[in-house]
Amino acid sequence: MGCGWGAGRSFRADAAKGRITQVDATAFEHRFHQHFAALELADKQLLVALSGGRDSVALLFLLRFVCGARVLAAHLDHGMRANSGADAQWVAGLCRAWAIPLVTARCREAPHGEDAARRERYAFLQSAARVVQADRLVLGHHADDQAETVLFRVLRGTGVPGLAGMAPLGPGLLARPLLPFWRRDVACYARARQLRWRNDASNRELGYARNRIRLDLIPRIERTIAPAARAGLVRLAELARENEILVKQAVGGVTFEAIRTDGEAVILSRAVFRQNPILAPLLLRHALRNFGPAPGRVGTRMAVSFITDSPSGREFLLPGGV
Image: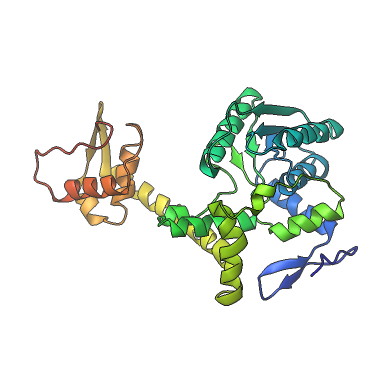
């Protein structure tokens, strides 16, 4: 099915998939600008992660020419593909043409695997954001990426916080203004505005877990089980995020009773921990936030059990010597 562009044409939802199938470019820009304003990015200096792919190019165009934002771009050449150097040169040419400052780097050694590449990329982007004193580090994740992330985490046995997927803002300086938009709509918009981009052949390789989820697993689920699976996964993330907000509010409501500090010591109320078994793990993590990395799920469960059930005078050592 084509994009169906037409002046003044309104959105038409595909009931089978819960996605927009016809998008007017101006309407898309208006919706993006509204979301951009809601995220309070208008007066910020933004560093955009620019791979050269369609989504990041469309995002940069929207920020620069539709929203009039103060933007810079950052590009890391992983050296994982033979044509990665050509991608870097193309990105540099685009930024010159659009009068956008660009920060670049190249890995000395190509990372081994997608997880290592992701770590290298985020480390570079965070460093670049500090160097240019960016207020926000802007990524091109969209609604399809959100659905894929949630499903990936479900398959790995994530907890409720993991079901929330990626946040529009945070953690840290991160911002994702394309998150409410589907991949197909971004693609239609990019073609309507006659944008050019680089195609990364590795995005079609099934050797990567995320590619298998995107190219094989989700399409198969939508064909055979749940036609609106992507929309359902995005909705799950929204509900989980709302739940996290409520839980944090509940934790804040009992923190004063449950946790006291005495010099360098933290005093925990056994009674409050016993009265709030659901909140107890979060209360413990809150109490230990200034003492190094939070314990894992097993360590937290053991520590809560110790607090609520062990006789007085006993000691329990958490990882890190806490």
